[in-house]
Image (cartoon, rainbow, N blue to C red; front, side):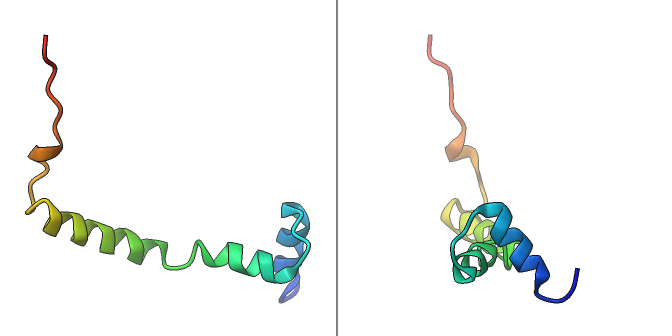
Length: 60
Protein backbone atom coordinates (compact mmCIF):
# COMPACT_ATOMS: atom_id res chain seq x y z
CA UNK A 1 0.00 0.00 0.00
CA UNK A 2 1.20 3.47 -0.81
CA UNK A 3 0.89 6.52 1.40
CA UNK A 4 -2.78 7.54 1.61
CA UNK A 5 -4.10 4.27 0.22
CA UNK A 6 -4.71 2.97 3.73
CA UNK A 7 -7.40 5.58 4.34
CA UNK A 8 -8.98 4.80 0.96
CA UNK A 9 -9.00 1.10 1.88
CA UNK A 10 -10.61 1.76 5.28
CA UNK A 11 -13.11 4.16 3.70
CA UNK A 12 -14.26 1.46 1.28
CA UNK A 13 -14.42 -1.22 4.00
CA UNK A 14 -16.45 1.05 6.31
CA UNK A 15 -18.71 2.16 3.43
CA UNK A 16 -18.07 5.83 4.22
CA UNK A 17 -19.16 8.20 1.48
CA UNK A 18 -16.50 10.78 2.24
CA UNK A 19 -12.84 10.57 3.16
CA UNK A 20 -13.48 13.15 5.89
CA UNK A 21 -15.82 10.72 7.67
CA UNK A 22 -13.11 8.06 7.64
CA UNK A 23 -10.47 10.49 8.90
CA UNK A 24 -12.76 11.57 11.77
CA UNK A 25 -13.45 7.90 12.57
CA UNK A 26 -9.73 7.19 12.76
CA UNK A 27 -9.20 10.18 15.07
CA UNK A 28 -11.26 8.33 17.67
CA UNK A 29 -8.32 5.97 18.12
CA UNK A 30 -5.65 8.66 18.54
CA UNK A 31 -4.15 9.14 21.98
CA UNK A 32 -6.03 6.16 23.43
CA UNK A 33 -3.19 5.43 25.85
CA UNK A 34 -3.13 9.03 27.08
CA UNK A 35 -6.92 8.98 27.56
CA UNK A 36 -6.68 5.84 29.71
CA UNK A 37 -4.00 7.43 31.88
CA UNK A 38 -6.07 10.62 32.23
CA UNK A 39 -9.12 8.53 33.20
CA UNK A 40 -7.11 6.67 35.85
CA UNK A 41 -5.80 9.95 37.31
CA UNK A 42 -9.34 11.36 37.39
CA UNK A 43 -10.75 8.25 39.08
CA UNK A 44 -7.95 8.27 41.65
CA UNK A 45 -8.87 11.85 42.58
CA UNK A 46 -12.61 11.16 42.45
CA UNK A 47 -12.41 8.11 44.72
CA UNK A 48 -9.50 9.37 46.84
CA UNK A 49 -7.37 6.47 45.60
CA UNK A 50 -9.80 3.97 47.13
CA UNK A 51 -12.30 1.96 45.15
CA UNK A 52 -14.04 0.57 48.25
CA UNK A 53 -17.03 2.83 47.54
CA UNK A 54 -17.56 0.88 44.32
CA UNK A 55 -17.86 -2.54 45.99
CA UNK A 56 -21.29 -4.07 46.02
CA UNK A 57 -22.55 -6.18 48.86
CA UNK A 58 -25.16 -8.88 48.64
CA UNK A 59 -28.04 -8.48 51.03
CA UNK A 60 -30.08 -11.53 51.83
